[in-house]
Length: 193
Image 1 (cartoon, rainbow, N blue to C red):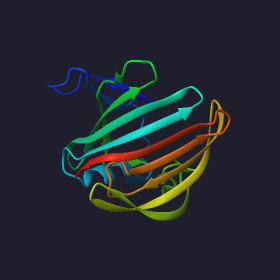
Image 2 (cartoon, rainbow, N blue to C red):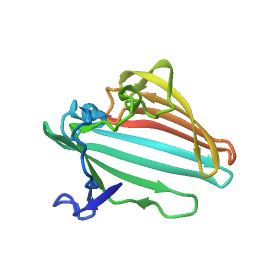
Image 3 (tube, rainbow, N blue to C red):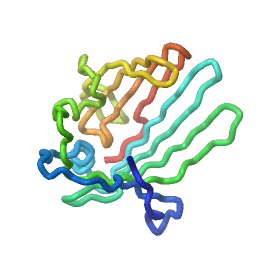
Image 4 (tube, rainbow, N blue to C red):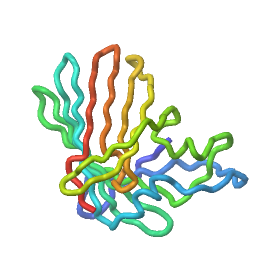
């Protein structure tokens, strides 16, 4: 559960900061590194990644552009900003508000959760290979993961290319929702490290 707090930075009145809801912490649980903190903290502040997603089905194509950046970091947390723009057929472009999410350096691993599984993109994900992907002038070695999810319309297959050298780790993603023949493809289109 998340709570939206405040109005963010002084130069963006549409910003929101998203914080985890307050819950009782079981001090007996093991503290581990938060994977989002580990990934984002290796970059300089203002490091930015832009991903473009195309969602196609019988109704047309929806284009979703997500810009994420390292807003602030210290030894205790990172703050990651994001802004999403959605373009639907025959509708005006929708530019969502800026969100800021805080990731702590560590967190308590829930009882019964396998730490190795937690660091995967999904508990169901299986690593199936590697591939080098070029973004601009740079090449990134990626790990490929595949798995099947279910949503309100039924089974969905997912294939994800991931690199620890990219803010947010996602380099490419492909999904297929079988029942609606909805195809989704997302790629990094801009990177500033």
